[in-house]
Image (cartoon, rainbow, N blue to C red; front, side):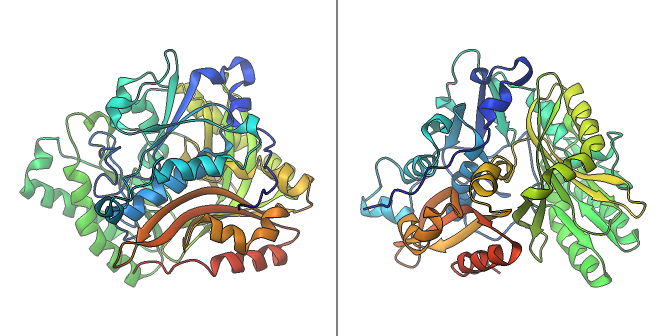
Length: 471
């Protein structure tokens, strides 16, 4: 029998935030798919985009079954944990192949059961109005509802949106950020020069690829390479030495032509082909979570420190709750600049921004995440962790891939879950192994600690369960 752990109450939800300044949360529906697989669809519920293309050259080498559970399952649940009672649409995930062969497919589907179980840890009034999309043609939102999709999805063009997906895609573009006039590090933008028809000519693609890569060869160290549309660090490379530069140029020989070939008549106006070479700033970025109201007012949600692995891939976020007022004041000017920029394009809703200091101690925007971010819930968890339990620090681990299911995790960490030190934000089960019957889980957890030492001790215990990353 499952142990009844205390329910989680957030300080505020997206439903509350969408109500500000005359907004109506009942008119909003979020559709979340998170990170598309760089090489195609990962589930029959969601075809690959051909218009709103992305680049993920640094993506983990995972098969589509695991990717679906990390992205469509755990990641989308995690992002939406803060939703509150707004309409939320997630995507169905194909059952494990061996389950289909053996005729033991779960009903209701595993992905749906996992999501409902995650959100059942919230107090009833803060649970999302959850639906699942089995295919694009079956998506039938209520009349009058405006969609906020992440990422922009081709089939959503057929439905009313908070802001048009073309505008949203460009707001997410690192190229457009560099050209926006916002304070960013000095950036060289190498624009694509081919037409959609020319992008299908292999000889022209080879010449264009070498033109773009030559700019990388000529760039003095250190610097940062950025693809225009990527997330979680999967299209960003920090170049500090000649060896790294050489290895990344080798990768670009494959990834740049792949980006070029995705240029079509349907997306050419969005400028999806470019490469950015940006000055490398010292230190680490601060991650701002904001809500932009329908009137353009910026509501501060949190300021956190992101954690990246050795490959530059996002692995987690830490929040110091006692410093939030101080950090808001430090960033208020740039917060208001960001709000004015996105609002003039018609955007309102949740978003994030990564900000760093240059050598003159001026704040610079290194990324603009104009969408619901993966650590957005950390601010609204302040009351749960800090105000009611005295846990001044919190850390988000995502994705965490472990053997076993949620029952086993809860048995290991029953005390910490009962004490409120661990909050499960996303969970998706799958099966691997030669038999196809070994259960694994992709999950996200928020962990609280009274100080950095106690926080790290619990993080170490949780991370000890993690499966090794694929090489």
